[in-house]
Amino acid sequence: MIVSITGITGNMGQATLEEVVKIDKIDKFKFLVLPDDKRIKKLVKKYKKYKNKFEIIYGNIAESETCQKLVEGCDYCINLCAVIPPHSDQEPQKAIECNQIGVDRLVSAIEKMEKQPKLIHISTVALYGNRNYKHPWGQVGDPLLVSPFDIYSATKLRGEWRVLESKVKEWVVLRQTAMLHKNMLKDNMSDGLMFHTCFNAPLEWVTAHDSGVLIANILKKDIEKDLGDAFWKNVFNIGGGEQNCITGFNTLNDGFAIIGGSAKDFFKPYYNATRNFHGMWFYDSQKLNKLFDYQKQDTKEYWKEIGRIYSYYRLGKIVPKSVIGTFAIKRLFKNENSPAYWAKNNDKAKLVAYFGSEEEYNKLGNDWSTFNLLVQNRGDNGEFVDYAKLRKLKNAKLIDYGFDIDNYKNITIKDLQKLAKLHGGKLLSRKFDGDIYKPLEWETQDGEKFVASPFTVAKAGHWWNKIYQENVWDFDRLSKKDKIFAQIWLDSHSKDENNCYYFDENFNARIK
Image (tube, rainbow, N blue to C red; front, side, top):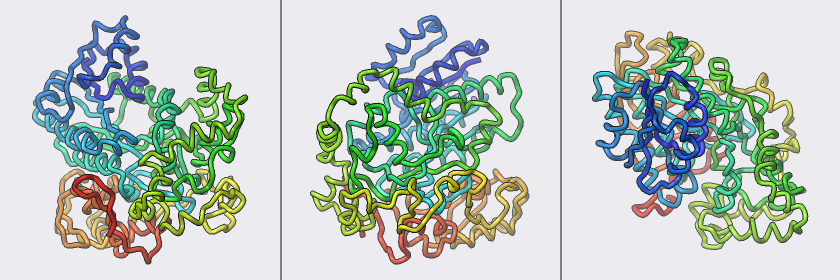
């Protein structure tokens, strides 16, 4: 049994390696590693007991020959690699090469094989875009409204589409939620990205450890031929379960508790975006857990572990909070990814995208008593919202898909026609034989024709628009006719907004 893995030196990759090396029936691992990635030496040294099973292929996933070499002779290919924020913001072209072009090269290599490996492709919660208290719960099938200027989510969207519409015989797409890992604090204290996390954003966390256990359990079950037909050629959400459904404010609060503080000690309301993030609570994350029993760690346990591993964080308890706030938090105001930087440099496009307008940004101020915090039972307009009740899975409010999404395998042509109409478009194909993976022809509200399977559109939630080909986020306009988009987009955007967000040729944020 041979398994190839990309992204093995990343946080999820390392957690996966720790679990999969224990599987006796795997004879060989093939790892794709960038030539300048020095982390691989530490991994080989750490797992020297298994190094005879390791074949390291140095190269780039955007190279066709490299991908062909990687998948040759393999039984499974696990695609974990991705250029993620803030690196994707700093080097957007690398995100395109890895998350989009790289996936195309990898899939193409598999398609050409007579004996194809099974493909496990890791996608992301970022595809769903911004959520707030109006629809904090969602599931596979919800519209994919990637946030403006987030090149990471745009390229991951395109990569996922390539997998779904491929000729790979057996694949699965796993949309990973926000992941807690050992390097999280270090990674998030070096860039203004931390200010993109909305205080009221619904976030479902999962640990890197549990994610690694999931991948290992998938391999174990399938090698033992203990997986049913419902797994392959499907899309699932990877989450940590209801116990790990909190908000951005909770997350910061729990993190600062290590040094004896709270989010309010170190942040002010105007520090963080109020929209245009990505994250939600997964109504369906239990589906994977029922199959693979991987949800073991909760957020409280994670922070305790971080406190044990990095004991020096506790020294923060004796340092004045004002000093930490100045030298650890406020120093990032000078970073180009920070809202404070956008305001100082009059970056209207970013301020509109993340706050609604410059005026809305300026209204936030310093006073927590006037800021509407969801954890304190206040909605965006100050209305009462029962946060404890909202967090219960049984109280989840889902959107209207126009058909019974739980019965998607038995979808009819009338269901497909209705779904297309709700999107403001049409189903052009006049015949549907019940094969949900056979491509059909569709038309968007703009009259653009595209080809996609009923599974991709109805179950996976894809609907063609400019973001699939261009770095253009046109959801203000689209949502005025698209009733599926509108159910989510208008939760955090006004019907009166008519903004089209886009990148220019140099990846500068623009608005028109």
